[in-house]
Image (tube, rainbow, N blue to C red; front, side):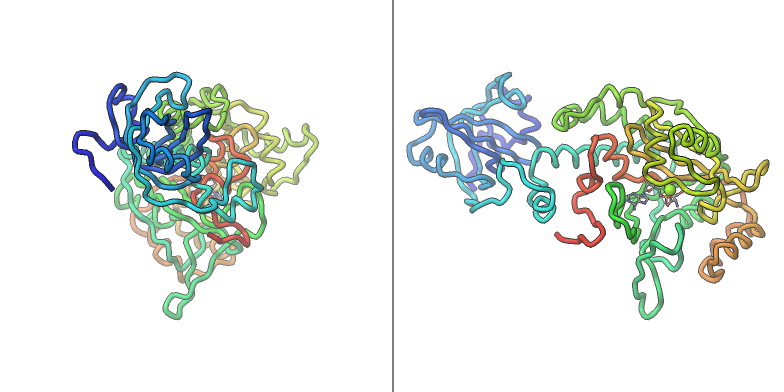
Length: 436
Ligand code: 4AD
Ligand code: MG
């Protein structure tokens, strides 16, 4: 690729600093059209899309002929003059002065016409180049950064949890087994148990990484591989835990509103609904939720966990994310601390996002008594051996502690207003779908 010493290489997102100047941009042909003797090529470089204008006068005839022949997604280097143009996407236009072809793409399969979801999923490696996917995945990156910034700022320490694990955290039905040098291991469902050890060492910690669930049902909310943010804090009560959640979620949403306006616009997201996301969040108990469900005509037996229609009915009754607290012990995980005033329910909460998005966070205070934890393992038919170290945490200076797990993809789906979780992660792993 040619270098012109006096012309800087610039990214489209930074064009505002180069108005009236000559720049070089390296990217791909997003689309092109001609009107009489003027050729408009939309060039994308990953950070944005800019419209270029070429005429027989601005480009030499050979380059003009080449420009006319460029196909969708051909890679190019361009040089030209940046002009303010409020009508152009992004507000700038480049008058093309020189052009170099890097690679001519042939028959790019995703054309500007509408394609079915199955076709797009089959071409996910190329679909990522579309401006909609670009907007979603940029918002995802901002969500992750905001989560980490928020916790780092508060003094939580990042402590990574292992992926290969000997034991279940969230029930045995969704485990992915792996052979670990002849021993039975599983891909991690959650870093929580290791976080509990880490918080006894560092006070307040979090892990951020992939979690795996062999979910046997195909829904618009379930992935087999998801990313989870999991804070855990020693001496945190149930109440402290909820406060941390509402502050974190509010910070994340407000940060996206501030930093990703353009992307939210690309997605046509109604931002008025997101602006409301500030603490405090409403709370209802599981029992109150059952009452609400009865009124709405979808009754549920006490002790049953919510399905999608139940979550949907609850979360659409509130304008902000809503906490459902005090779930029955029998529908939740073994490690959740029973409410001392009412041991059949736990000091747990799910946070349900509005507009029908449902659960984005699950969390609780944890059992800190050795005896009770041993009893719960037994009741849940879990073998004691793989949890020996976990029980140790209740042997040596056990303290009340709490934590939660926030699903990144569920959160991104909600913030972006997506219909299906598959678009919220670069390469979704779904039931019977692992390609590409
Ligand atoms: O409610 P879950 O199962 O909680 C835990 O794993 C706890 N051990 C976390 C903790 O307390 N440290 O999962 C937490 C969140 C859910 O609220 C949801 O957002 C997301 O992880 N999640 C999924 N997202 C997409 N696909 C799936 N199959 C998911 N399973 C859970
Ligand atoms: Mg849950």
